[in-house]
Amino acid sequence: MRVRDAWGVGLVCALGLAGCDASDATRLALVAGHDAGGAQSHALQATAAAFVGDGSRAGGTGRAQAAGLPFGSIDPDLFAPDSDTPYRATLDRGLGLRLSHRVPLGGATALEASVLGGVGQSRYHLPRGMGALVDPAEIRFTSVTLAPEIAVVQQVRLGPYDLSAQAGVGQQFSRTRTSVQSALLDVHHRSDASLAYLTLGLALTEPESGVSVALDVRAPDSDQIRLRSELRLPLGR
Image (tube, rainbow, N blue to C red):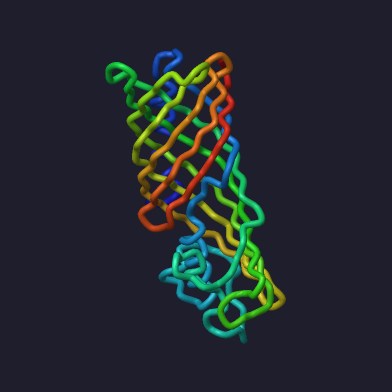
């Protein structure tokens, strides 16, 4: 599915949630935390394909070719578990809006539908470069994402707080701008991705203010497992 189609799907979901009866079950929150993009591997693979002129796999647009540089100058498998290229994250942040609605299933169990839209930035430093180029390099990602999700939620009281555990599925649509820079590289590329994922999470909420701290593990269908944390600040309470 193309990103512009995905925004239509997300808008329908958001309108559906917004049309629910106004109650404590429907919530809008400002979300701050890690980069929610989750499409870095796909974006880097698309950039590497564009760099060598493989338009059939590039899946995006941008300035990504540099004549005279060796094949493999951009490692598309940098984030693979078996990669031996050293790197470290120097930036990982995201900001977005989350609209959610819960439908009770009985007892403390509920079904929650949500839509998260936002922007994220992440940056990685490669001290020994990658591939045939050994000069230090930097890779930057800037993503706009939309993620409709549905989950089963179990809530319990934990002292003065509400603790929620959830398991669900979602679909994340991303448009990512990738930048790869070193002494010899100045590559820019934009790509789209659609990633299905499974999620397990915990959220601790202060009932009076509605402020939540959430932690979740996501297992996308084409990326490594990601551990994310975020702060949710309620709006319109």
